[in-house]
Structure formats: structure tokens, C-alpha cells
Length: 481
Image (cartoon, rainbow, N blue to C red; front, side, top):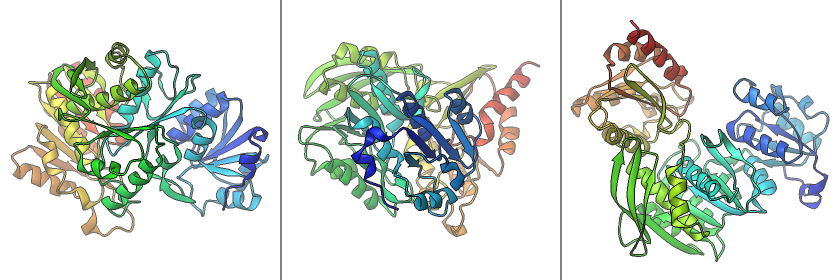
């Protein structure tokens, strides 16, 4: 399958766009942006169900339930193919036979929305969603009317996308692969003018062989920056230092080190917010605050401040934007406080993210017991590659429950992550930890132990059997007696 050049020759001829894999969070957002831009949009997915089915219905987009060549009738002018689609997919086979022009998701995003705007791309193993959300929110508060596509629901907009009239496009630069016909990273399609690189670590073991493979992809991304562009890089990460060393544009480093272009100091937790001082090129710049806990979120905010400074946003407007940020769903999101027990939902799954998230919560809720419920669900976390790395990451947790993950197909048992082994290793470390085979078992064990003033952090990048809602319902029953 090769992309037809008809798309580039006559873009004005495109009226009907069909999206394969439309119920993915990013794909549904793209569908909404295309619909708002005046295109007729249809789609298909393996299973069409809430909440995305309701979102699509609300904006009058029909989604076929299941894949079939018949979904390409009437013939669309363009098909956008999600990375959940395989070569063997019957609709993909029908697409090839029909000879309809097609694009991947990141190609479409670049073609329709990024290429006419200044592209601000946030990349890195950790912090992409938070940092890109902070950036988009600050641009909006500064009345610069940004367009964005982000991997989480930004509370200020109650959406993960926005179609603005301003000159900037903010994207979350995902290093995951693009499509079955393009195994390069998504962020290589985003035409960066200014980029943030938060961190570079090994992840996505299903598509990257090792850390060197990830570095190669980031180096390709760096090479895309124009000579008058800017990379804001966390230069306290040696892997980031390596990937930007041959950058074709200016690189501004950020971190705790006063020798970097941007540095922060005097970090002070105030409940769910954090205050800190900033320096730019050796001079005091501004006192900032962000409504998020943890030093890592201060670093994310500092990177945003650097980008805003480059495009001319004043320190005062930067401070206003950061301090008024309303947060992101599933990123240290307080789901409820029942009987004095605070239930928090977070996306953390990589060892570094788990460690930083738990440290931040322990500081934010000083003096309160932190109970952690962890579900390793990604392709990487379900493998043994992080087995040892997880051990020191739960030191901030007073009581930890680890859900045994579903095994990966075609992976030998000895190469799989063991929740039981991690619980045993944490116990040897002097921590209280248990592994559980089922979510129901976790609920049965944790509920009797919870008491007023506890904080429960639920870490998973999936739905986790609706454990958040179920736990809060059970807490209602417990404390209403």
C-alpha cells in the first residue's frame, strides 16, 4: 500500500473522510476536528461503545461497528488508518483493492492542522501529557487561541483537542509507531518548530528493541528542527544530552542545576499545589506556582515557561496560566473523598513515573497514610524488564497492593513480570505489600484497612475493572453505617 499523490495535488477535492479505528481517543478527537473544519466524516472500529460512541453520536458522525470493505461505501475521498489496524484487517484489504488515498493518524494531523501553524511539540518518556496540557492552557489564558491534540482530557476544555484560530499547534509527541505501513515514531510527522524533551528512557518494549533504538528515534526527531527553531531539553538526563548533541538549532537546558539556561529552586508544596523560584541564564526570572504536586511537575512547568518566553508571553501571563491550570483527568486526579479517604487516579506505569508520582503525593499529603494500588498493564510493565527497577519506586507508599497482570501472548513465563515477586521484594525492603490475582481480591483486602485521612493512589493506564468507582461506592457503604 502506497499513499496516493492525489491528496497533495488536489486537497480541495477532499470532502468525505473515513477513519479506521475511530474510537481511539486520538482518532475520535481528530474526527471531531475534521468535522468542525467542514468535512463529512465516517468511521469504523472493532467495538463501538461509550464514551466514544456517545461523543461521535453527539457530533453526528456515524461509526460502523466492525471492520468490512463495505464500510468504504459510498467511496470516501480519503481514509485515515489508525495504528490498531493490521495488514490482515478486512477493511484494510478492501482499502488496498479500492485504491483510495490514505494517511496515518499523525500524517493526517500534520496535513490538515499542523502545517499551517507554528508546531510546538512536547516529547519524552515521561510528562508529555501534563506538559503539553500546561502549554495549551497557558496559551489559551494568554489569549493566543491555540489548536491542540493531547493524550489526556484537559479539564479547562473538557476535551483532549481544540480547534483554535491562533498561530500555534500544541501536540503530544508520542514516540510510539505510526501505522502498520509506517513503523517510525508518530512525532516524526509533526513538523516541529519548537520542542520540549522531558526525558528519554527505555519503554514500549513491544516496538523498541532497546534504549539505543529509542535514542535513534529521538535523534531523528531532533534533526527535524529548523535552524531558527528551539529545543527546550532536560539536560540533567544524560540520554537527553546525547540525543540533542547534534541539534541543528538552539538548545536551552532546564533543570535544578543553576548552570542551565532555565533552573528552579526553593520548591515548596502547598497541598495540591507547588511553588518554586525560577532563573533564566543566571538571573532571577519569576516566582511561579502550579496546581500540581511534585518536583517533576515543577520541571514540566519550567519547560513550558521556557517555550512561552520564546514566543513572547510575559512572566506575569505565564504565572497566571500555570496557577490557574485545572489539571488533567487520570493525572493525579482526585476522584473523590469519602469518609475522609481521598481516592486518586493516575496513569503512572513506568518505574520512573511510579516513583515520582508517589513521592509527589506523599509530600502533598504530608502526615497521611499513602495506600497504593498498582496495575502493570502496558506491554513493557507486563514484562520482566522492569522487575528490579520497580523495587525502590514504592518507598513512599505505606501499603501497596499489586494486581497480577494478564500474561502476554507468545512471551515465555520467565520473561513476564511477577506481581508476587515484587510484593516479596518490597516486603524484604521493610515495606507492607501484597500481590493479588484479581481486582475483586484487592477490593476485599483494602476496604477493611482504610480509615479517615488515608490517601489511596490507583496507578494504571487502563480502566482497571472500574476499581475507582467501585472502591468509592464501597467506601460510601462503609462510612454510612
